[in-house]
View 1 (cartoon, helix red, strand yellow):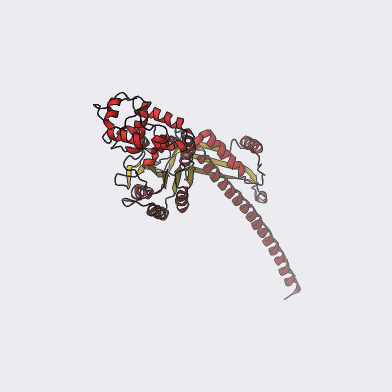
View 2: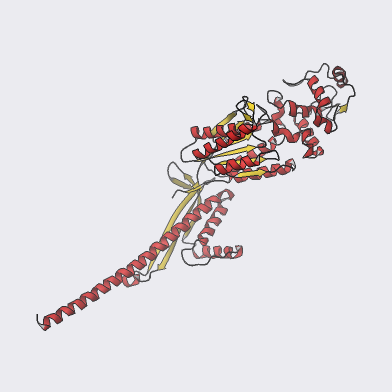
Length: 483
């Protein structure tokens, strides 16, 4: 091979190598820019997703609150190296600056999402979703300008909504749910408070009188039942309800320890008669009018249920609710209302129940089982399924008899069954008599939450606490991205 040929080939290799280096550098430049573009795009998608979810979570407080929360999460998740301030004033300033800088690139709106059609409607009166669309324009490329492209745009859109819930509310209708209206509770509530409540109940019943008995009890010294009835003018007055009698009432006032401790032994009047109904004749089959009066704590529970329903209906979440109670007439549980979106019916039905409505004992396991079976049989696919379980006492009824240890064990068995079915149980312990440890255990087993409304406080105080608990439960709304 001649020297000139070798020299020519070396020259060609130099040129080829130079061309390949240019191509390689172009590919590297392109890869750097492409990687940069993908990084910013993925960061923006995460930021927009988090903003939509945060906005949807705040939607219950209104569209303005939802929009503000979405902006906050866009600021908290910058696509660049912007430092986010920790203090509220600094964050507020950065949100304002963000809105000023991106007014033409950002869209946030509260919409009504339709799961069936997979579409949304803007301007709805009760939105259930938040739509966030964000883009960053004219972002600089590192090397693209060599190829004639110096800037690029990234954009992302997300819609987040509430996952519809199927909720079973399980209420305690045991006999202890009127204890705070009885003289027996003077030890934990003041006597004046209980007597005021008994007077309120009397008024709610229409301020009835029988014979010559007024509200305030009067002392009758005789131990003879007939003499007492004659003195009270009851000899020819029919006893007003299906269960009980004047004779039984008189014997109760003469012998009951709580009546005696309150200073009302042998004192007869509407105060002691109402206490007799609450303690000895509480069932709907015995004294059917007690559902309409403010017997406590069950009335506080009814008030909290109404607030719960009001809070749920503040936004259109496509939730449904069922109502189960324990105990039924046979000591088990009863489904009062199957899963429905007629929340007014749930409220009406709970209002028309009274302490010991069907049965006196406490079969918490039966209530939980009834709720679990309702979800298994009637819950919709794709919904978030949950149980709200309330008690003011201890599980004590098992298979037709009084057996606290077996009743408690059965409750744990039912909690494990709910766990296996994937149903979290949010438990509420109401008052000093509630078994908080077992209710905490049920919540822990099922990945639920336990709320404790302590005893030893006024009715107004635990009513406020109970309402706050139900508000928190109503706000326990799972969110999901639908776009």
